Amino acid sequence: MEQFIIANLAPIMFGALVIFLLSGFPVAFSLAANGLFFGLVGIELGLLKPELLQALPNRIFGIMGSENLLAIPFFTFMGLILERSGMAEDLLDTIGQLFGPIRGGVAYAVIFVGALLAATTGVVAASVISMGLISLPVMLRYGYDKRLASGVIAASGTLAQIIPPSLVLIVMADQLGQSVGDMYKAAFIPGLMLTAMYAGYVLALSIFKPTHVPALPLEARNLGEPNGDSGARSLFTMVGVTLAIGFAVASVLRATHPELAKDEARIYSTAVTVLLGFAFALANRRMKLGLLSRMADRVIFVMVPPLALIFLVLGTIFVGIATPTEGGGMGAMGAILLAMLNGRLSWSLLKQAMNSTTRLACFVMFILIGSTVFALVFRGVNGDLWVEHLLTSLPGGVNGFLLVVNIMFFVLAFFLDFFELAFILVPLVGPVANKMGVDLVWFGVLLGVNMQTSFMHPPFGFALFYLRSVAPKEVKTSDIYWGAIPFVVIQVVMVALIIAFPHLVSVEAKVDMKENLELKIDPPAGEAEPLKLPAAGADKKDEDSTPELNFSTDTETETKKK
Image (cartoon, rainbow, N blue to C red):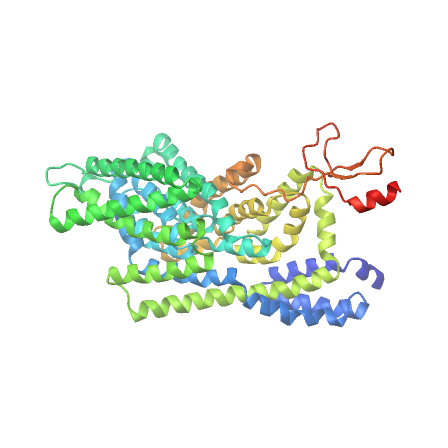
């Protein structure tokens, strides 16, 4: 029996952890208790030395000193301030009026605002609760299908999982040892694609089931002109002019500064364009020029502040001006300024935001400390080698590995949230992916999209619980669950698309640092040809174009001749 335990301590330890988690015991303490218990068992059986556990204090201090993790409270605080500053309410009302004349207009507005809130808050709870309180009663009042209304709100809130500045991506970058900025850049296109796929589902419903997604009635559209015009022409003209200015500014920047990357030129040109458009709208309002319709004026003054905050946070990170932690600090300050400009900044608001931020930060830190204890002992009993052998021996090579890992994350997401999945499983599968040649930034984005489903899985999805807490009584829990299923399917399709088309995740090419040198040592005259040492993997038939390195000296040559 003792020999069996010694030979299989790693799988026994992992199985005990699963039992602990399913029992409902707090995750952080389950991890730490499991690690310490099996650490003592390993010491008793002679598998581990007591000195191993002395590494725990240094690991805990390393967690406390992590700059990447410091971004989590900053972005959480920023999201909570914005959620209480009225920005979500103004956005939903304005965008709902903009899309109101078309079928599913309010649903499109919820998806668009969900993506915008994701890019400014990064907090799922804030997005789902805000949109559930504001837009769900409106959608129900005008005849939207209950399941669709519930599903689109919950799904749009989960966009905060993958669209930067996502807390998930910060944790994934920390666990995989990658740059948060690289993770943000790589996740940008998948996040936009997922948003477009949600909108495509609403479009399909508007075609095949138009009664489920009606347009807003005329009496509900209150941003029109006195003569009955919607004012959309003025808005589209303004958008077209600003886009033309943006392209012109980008062309000038690239011509005058050829060292700028395309992305950096686009970010700078977008910032200039948005500021010019806002300045024009401000002058039009102050001087009462009447050049913009009510719709255009409202859209600009509601949209530009969050767009400016997005540039402040993500733009500075992408162009390398600020680190993610510094970007989070600027975002938190920007959120306070926006709340102040809206006249909603108060001590009560600050106190609530700080309390919620402290709770979430402590929750994350305790789970991370518990997972560190577990990981230290698990690796001490060769658990990492057991996991590596288990995953690398799967049929299908890399594709088989990716398939099994994604199925495992998808199934475990029924019971665990993304923090627990990231801290428990990612450290186990990340090194295996690296050894199999999988880019870790791409791998992190793939798992991030997969772990989005942890918020949408019936019956344990947190987004569903958040929506249930604010939904009216006429919306049944079964409506929320059934409404979430199509969007879970869309998320799974997005995971399959990333695996099938890896270039959807924009990962920068790594620079090959191997030196392709050929060493030639000239022998004395009359002896054999110089010995060539080609670089590993070089084609013998290729003609050498590298410079010769002659390590002999004139003195040595003369001596040998004598």
